[in-house]
Length: 209
Image (tube, rainbow, N blue to C red; front, side):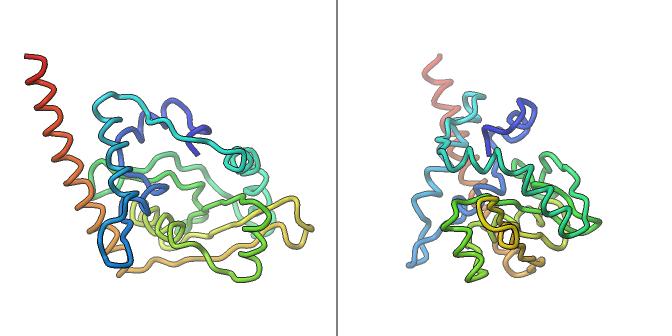
C-alpha cells in the first residue's frame, strides 16, 4: 500500500509499472479490447513522470486495516509454516525498463509471499472457495517475473476469525504462458506510455518557447 511506503520506496517506484497495478495495465474487456483502467493507470504514470510527484491514491478504512494488520499476518505465516520472510524492497524487472515489483517478502531460495488482510466476508469466501482473484494472480506472477523466483504463497489473514481460520495460504507456481503474456502486454503498455510522454514533453517545450 502506498501509505506504508518510505520516501525512498516512493522514489524508486515513481512513474513505473508495478506489480500491484499490473492487472490495470493489462486489463481487457470481454471483447478483447483494452479496459478503461489501463488508460487511467497510464495517465497516472505519465503525470508522475512529468511532475516527479506521486499520484494521489484513495486509501479506504479497509486498506488502512490491511496495512496495520500485515505484520501480524507475516508473523502468523512464519510461525505456521516454519519459515522466515525476508524483506525485498523494490525490485526492477531485469528485462523490461521502468517496471518492477515490491513483494511482501522472500521465502527461502525460490519463494515469495503476498499478504492480503481483507474484510471478513472476503476472507470467508476464500476459506470456502480457495479461489484467488485474477488481479492478485497477475500481481504474483509479475512479482515472479521481476525476481526470477518460482512460486508465491498467497496468504489471506483475518485475526477477527477463530484461530484455526485466521490464516489460509495457497501457493501459485511460475507459469511460462501467463508470464510471457504479461510481459508482452507490459511492453506494449510501456511503449504507448513512453510515446505519449514524449509527445507531451514536446508540447511543453513548444509552450515554453
